[in-house]
Image 1: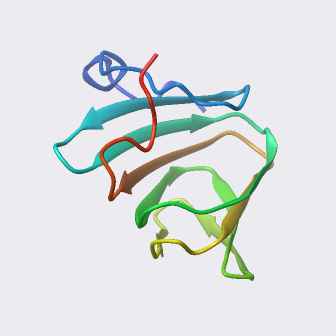
Image 2: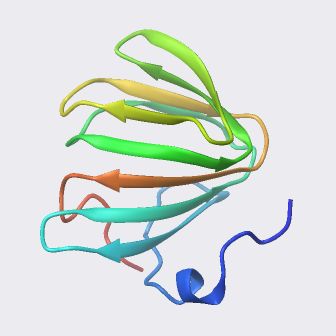
Length: 110
C-alpha cells in the first residue's frame, strides 16, 4: 500500500494519538473532528467509548466490535458507533480509515 493521502491532507494538523503505529490528520470543525487515520498492523485498540463516530474504510480492513458485536470491515465499508457505546478494534494489516467524531476535542493536536 502506498501513501494514499495527498499533501493537502498531510498538511493538516496531526492528532496526538496514544498508540505507536497510528497517525491521524485532523480537519477541525466547531463541534466535530474529521480524522484521516493511517493504522499500521498494531493489533488491538482496547475497548472504549466517546461521542458518536461514523467512519469509512478507505483501504485495508479491521475487525470492529461495537456493543459486543464483531464484524470485519473492508475497503468501502462504513460503520456508525452511537455516543457512549463501548467498542474496540483489531488491525492486523495497514488500514486507512476516515472517521467523523461528533465532538470538537476527541483528539488533541501535536
